[in-house]
Structures are given as structure tokens and as C-alpha cells.
Image 1 (cartoon, rainbow, N blue to C red):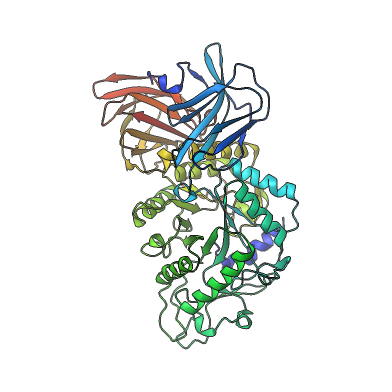
Image 2 (cartoon, rainbow, N blue to C red):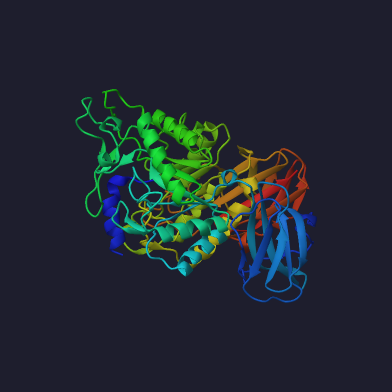
Length: 583
């Protein structure tokens, strides 16, 4: 998680601051309107058969209706009465739904609001990872607000970053006498009450709680706790100099690195984790590393195969606590292929650094992870936005964030970026940048979209290059990767459907996903743009959904058939539209 060498600087910075419309449920055209209500649900994710409680924040006309769809299939529709209602989740597992409240006004649908639903018995199928980073004397009202917000965004797992006491001894105190407070690595005071409250609140929302720690870290007092010099990695073959991440004040200690493959170290940290689990009801262990640091040696002078050590370490942790979940950071993919990707982890987690700075790199990482895990694990990217802007207090650049999320989500990944604040640096407590109101609103729509359409975005399929052209000359198109002045097209064959993503890079300032200096431009919204698609099979329905339109609520797209091709018009394109052709 960390490029820990930069922690001190970061700490200082923080301190300084279709024609066929039956599938729509009715035949009325959809009117694009601003969302006028807020819809919330009581949990982030549901098990099959669970009751789902909905709440809206204001009264609506008696003619308003609530409907739930799974992709373009109408599941249920009923009149809306009052501000609260319930629906029972279907028995089908691993399924995303979109619920919306609408009314017919002069024969036209007015969409009041929408919310996504995820019915999944296990978070690893569609991970949406968030974080927590502060555990001081926090009020319950504040912690509830944080957790309610993350639940509304459908975050189904949380990384408890830097919550623990010391790397080699996560638990402060003992199982029988745990300390009520302690200093973390950065000399912040953390409280047992805050950690426990957050864990319980997470579980109340069906959110996993993961304990963060390095796989190979120890502080300068580790010998007194039983850590042997023979367990460390060294920069020389004569075990004179331990491999170290040097830190100064206010950090309690530099971090000395152990050999992750050393079985004695594995047994030691597993035993201390067992003590930690006895006090704190964490669901598992988020395992960190710091990337490729060159050649290191064991105490006996042998070169350490660190990536192979990661695999050994993860296997040992799984054996020691088989009921607990594991996730491991692959810093810029270090150790991912052949090691982490085939280890007992719930999903693959990549922290992205230079030279992987382009949108194409994000897509490649996600696709590589899928291949390296034999299509068995999803990807979460730790990708920190507006990096240089975050050297001072200020605001995220909305188009930078939304373009990055559009690419990550379209390629089937998710983005760890949401916690008490949005991430801008690898030191998670850094909250120098805030979200402007437009980003606060958009991010809800994007996470609803990621969740509601998870079975298209993240549930199989084969990426392809659809045959599609502009028929009115208003825009330029190119199949992925993006090109200057053009709309990028990403196709995916889902067997019974063709999915086509349109990402509007037509006036993008750059293809730097990080938008390091906050210079990415807001895309010009395009209206009524016409296309001709030559599909591989006859099309029976065509529909559109976009996080930028009606909170992701789908609308039918009329089309005309001519030979093997169909002609249609997209009503609008701002950042990202998803067109679906049903065969």
C-alpha cells in the first residue's frame, strides 16, 4: 500500500492541513432529468432472500412507482406509498439490480431517483473496496455517517489502514488485557473503541473488515518481542545490514524487513494475528509490501526470492487462519504473476505507479490479472488521483477522477478510493483534497452503475472490437486504446449480448489517468450522435445506460435494420455511455 519511503513527507503534508420497448416495463420514452430524490438502502450488499429496506428523503405524487430491473429485465414494479418500503432479494446469487422511482408526466417518464442493489453471498465475486484511516476519539454519530456513506456507495469491504500497534505485534496489550489506546507507526493515538465500533458497523452493513499490515515489517523493538535476527532480509551476504525502510520523526521507528518465506517469521506473525483476531473481529488480513527493492539476502547469505516468498507467506497465513480472508497488494504488479495471483487471496489488488501512467496501462493491468488468475479473480486498483495537486489542500479535478473510474469500471475492475475522504496519496490519512459537489454527486452514480450492471461489467465475456462507424460525421471513433480527438470504443461479447462502451476522450487534455496536476478537461457533452453497427448476430433489442444520465437508469434506443447493419442515435454522451445489443 505504501511507498513507505515517502511517508514522512506525506505526514507533514497531512499535518499542514430500440424500437422494441417492452423491456423497459412500459413504452413511454424516457425524459432525462436531474435526480430529485435520494434513495438509500439499509445495507451495502445483500444475501439471496434477504429483506431490502428502501428509504426516500421526500414525498412524491401518489402516482409515482418503484421498479426493479436486472439489466433490461423488469423484475417488479409497484406504486410508491410513503417514504419507506421493502422488497425481498431474489434467490439468484451474484446479481446486480437497478431500482428507480419514476412517474409518467404527459406520457413521458420522469425519473426521480435510482439506487443499485448487489445480491451476492460473497464479496470476492464483485469486490468494491474502501478504506478507513483514522481511529481517534471519534463520536459514534461521525462513524455512523462514514459507514452509512460507504454503504450507500455499495462498498463491500474496508481496509483498516494503520489501525494496529506495531507491524510485528498488531495487538496492543494482550488478549486478556488489551490496551484501550496505543500509538500507531506515525505516533497517532488509536483507540480500541473506535476500531471495534467501525468493525461492528461494517458488519451491520454486510461489509468485510480487513486488518492492514505489511507481510514483512518489524520495528526496532522487535527483538524484545521474540523476533530473531535470523529472520530478516539483508542487503549484504554477511547479514551486517538489514533491509530497511528508513523513517524519521514523527514515526516511532524505521521498518525493518523480514524474509517473507522464513517459516519461523510466518509462525510468529500468524500467532500474533491469532491474538489480534481474538480481540478484534476482523474478517481477514490485507497484506502489504513495498515493491521491488533489488537484491536481498537471507541471514545465511542466500538470495531471497521475494515474490516466491509472498506466495509462501500467503499459503502459511491461510493455513494458520483458514476462516479469515486474504488480500495482497502487488505494487506495480511486483510478485503478482505466478505468485500472488495463484495464492489463496479473494481478489487481486494492484497499486499502480510509473511507468503505468496511461489509461491503457490500467486496462492492461486488469486484463493481465484476469489472465494470470485463470479468470478466477477480480481486480481492485489502488490508483491515486491528482497526485501533485494533493501536495497542498484543495479539490479533486472531477473529470480526472471520472475518466479514470470509467476506464477501470468498463474493463471490469474497481478502484479503492473511498473512505472517510477520497484517496489522493499512498498514505491514506492524507485528506488534502476534497470532492466538489459535482464529484460528490457523480461518484454515487458511478458506484450505482458499477454495482447495478456488475453482471455486464465484471461477470465474464470476451473483449472484442465491434464494427461501428459514425453515420453523421459528428464524431471520430476508434476501438481501444484511446486516440486524440476521438471517442474510445470498448466492446465485449457476452454471448447473448454485445456490450459497447463509449468513453468520450474527444477533447481530453491528456491520457494520463492520474491527472497528476488536475489539468484534465470536462468533456463536451455530445447530443444526438448517430452510428451504424454491424453486429455478429441479429439484434432484437438495443438499450443504453450511463452513469451520466438519470443515475444509470436504462433507456431503450430505437434502431432501424438495413441488411446486416443497424442504425441508431445516442441521445447524449458526456463521459461514458454503455450500449447493449441483445441478440
